[in-house]
Image (cartoon, rainbow, N blue to C red; front, top):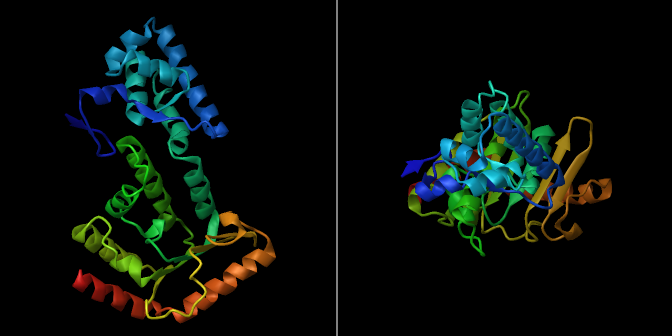
Length: 292
């Protein structure tokens, strides 16, 4: 048994799983995967190899090679590297990893990551779980594992990888202003068990030290605030535009209308004002960590 780059254990049967299923509703992503598949097929045929021979050489089954070449499976980076070497492509196939890197993640998460990547300000209130940008890999894996119907191990790893990719927002220059308000319960619900939660709380304390990040806690005792309807998130961009979203209004869809955004900003402003200050919040998180 081996371990691939995502940390997933793979036995012999794993060699027949060189990628991820293509989302049929993701037209742009499907087009990229189809183009990559055609390139691999062209190089394979130019090398005079049958699909079965090629698959055996790089460690994958014939059926899976046909799926990748037919644009029905998203190839993993290691498949592209092996194909490049075996087919003597001189780096041309391996270079396609950059094209595949984005579409390997679900479209909904890619779209969110693009918005977060453009934002100069992000404000987010979470009442049920810790915000995705604040989650550790272990926490998000444990959280996603609670979903029903359950994700397959393949799907679960794909979702975790996608969320982790969003964390690149913390490395951006110039750094965006990030503001989070978390309900106390999100710090106390033992997602993944004690060790996972301890790591998660320690991670919050580290992020809270960043100059462009403010994390606040809404104590459970504070019941009089406008966040009882669910999550709120507002992203502002350099051109003055913005987009927001909330669970209980606008059908849960992103909105950019100024009147609707004003409602979300008003609610978030009140929530932020009634939460503990950033300094008090970090002390509170330290307290919860000591109790965990």
